[in-house]
Amino acid sequence: MPRFYLDQSLEIGMQCELPEDLSHHIGVLRLKVGDTVTLFNGRGGEFAATLSAMEKRRVTAHIKTFDAREAEPGHSLTLAQALPEGTKMDWVIEKAVELGVTAIQPLMAARSVVRLSDERAGKKLAHWRAIVAAASAQCGRNRLPSVAMPQAFSSWIDQHDLHPRILLSPRGQQSLTDWARHRAPQAITLIIGPEGGLNEAEEQAAISRGAICLSIGSRVLRTETASITAIAALHALWGEF
Image 1 (tube, rainbow, N blue to C red):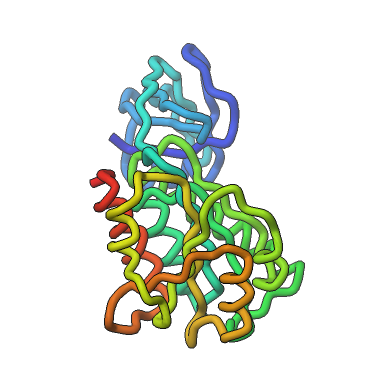
Image 2: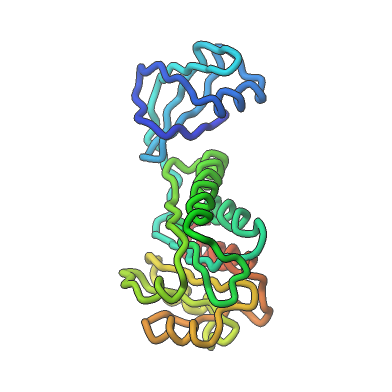
């Protein structure tokens, strides 16, 4: 059944006029009056609705039932990802959402190729949140992972974090999987560097503020590969798969 994210209050019995972009998507899918779709607003659960009216740029759906189904992981996982080049961040966010991260913190590190002004950061943030909504609709999540405003690594690392921070580095003496096997599932933050990794000063700053330095194996992975591999490994070891 097609699923669509709608950023508004939803309730049973409501006649809901869909935004133009969703109406266009429904037209592309060649759905028709009487077809059933799933709507969710990111606040938990999902609604079954029947398409009740269709015009060229306007579709109305009649909400019929509510299902409290959830697809969230049993533990919170924040991905603190240093910005990679090009569109790699889009890919990382999409796959991280599918794998079950609960929050994403974009970071600008010393070796980050991408540098964002406040204006560009705001536009990127809106773009990334749209990717989160689309990925959540595709994979069946009913709550949207949060995406924070990009921050400089030096500023972010100084902030207090209630969760353990895991710094992935080729210099880690213990593997992520070995560490996770001996821990109960818990909320954590994964720190992933950019192309070229975090520099020595950044790694030392993270470690001095309590980050646990771990490796992800004998091979050096690309930044986008490391983040997705680490998330998948943790979820597999902690029973999410």
